[in-house]
Image 1 (cartoon, rainbow, N blue to C red):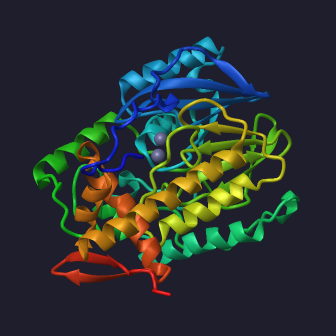
Image 2: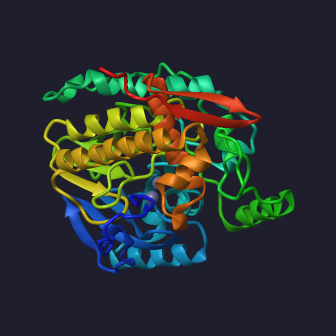
Length: 399
Ligand SMILES: [Zn+2]
Ligand SMILES: [Zn+2]
């Protein structure tokens, strides 16, 4: 989502540059770091052509990171990639899920079931199947998790990895099955949104049918181990550090191998598209996103980023700066738009910021994240107009 709505008089738009994250899944298997294989699986999602499933080899077999979408087609592709790499499903002893998006957790539950694998995710990890069990994380607890990540990020100044805090099990919330009220509301197939005025809910019947179909399609990805910031995870014969990186989702997890400077960056840092920042259900998602971008950019000795989409990239700090610049520009644009149109809803502002083909929940939730960031910085105000949040960005104080 990097497009900006066109205005009369704007110069002609340059052709859209090709994005490597959109390439179809290759069958090639590459060892991208010592003991780390990249296997691409096809996905069917707007703007993305594949997901990278990483296989980390050790003497027990294989750990995999982000094993792709649910459903038989992706499962078949996964099995054939494993076979080509010399493994069977039952060789997979661990599945790591970087965050709660279906192209990452889809096959995790089935792998856990069929291979008897351990399933590792961040302690805030949640999906609709966990939500159905009824446990909830309050919005205040979600905010506390976010705040904690910001504090953890601010403690790390490099160059010593010992400075990464290791928080030994002082858990902040009930960890087994958690969700936030707003995450429940904004499930992908409909529901209301925290900013109000949603025009895309689906009728309850088709929503129920969708949930039933999902239950038939796949085994729920319930974690057997929930990690927190600083927890070591043993993969490919060495310890990787869990790094909590909320922003794209509240439960986003990166893993860092200090020995080789390798960062499994999930959707937190992508090589050529800007990850979506989800404003649903969190305090200041953009603030925690930016803080934890800085954290991964400053990791001692970081040399190689292994993203969930696209190719490995070697300048992690440089890519972090580009993504931060992008958000600065978006915020600048939002200030201009708000001053031009006056008080407006999130939906209306998102329509000013994004071209029509991108209108919808994703554009709205990112606009909401930017607005909440400005509001919490004292740069915007909001009020409730009959269930719809209305925002006004304050004009700069005149000199
Ligand atoms: Zn994602
Ligand atoms: Zn993704």
